[in-house]
Length: 176
Image (cartoon, rainbow, N blue to C red; front, side, top):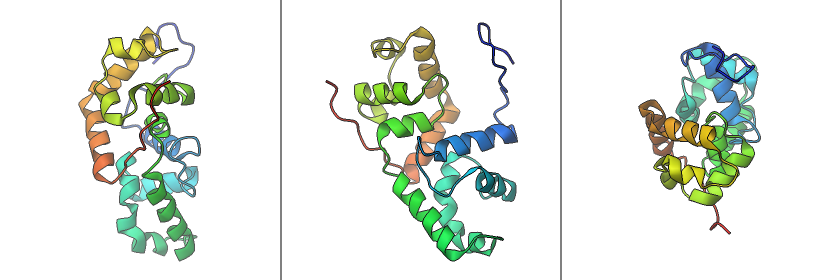
């Protein structure tokens, strides 16, 4: 679909395999959760095999270590490095976690602003439109997208699953 006022066309189908792959790749990327070794080819391969289904499934890959080692071109050392990188990413800074979620209109800078302003994931999860608008450089469209994203049950469940998997974003420092 093409949103009014935008040039880009986007796919609204959340079940689309290409969207699932793109979300996982973005989440694992260097500027997001920085999970070294979980690149596009491996993401696509693990999606095809059913090892990855959503963002939280990344943190369950350790349960499938034996199966992963059996895969072509996957040795014990590379699996060990991947699982270590996944484990280390659980304590990523809050701004990187926010960016990794892939909220529409929330880039790296906006994620930093949100982390600095709200300091905790819990505070951001419950932030209302008016509070979001008070964050410097966040306008009505972005505030609306953020509020709507956190209100969706599917996204609330995703965050709960990530937290249950041991992801614990490091709180931001006190705002200046």
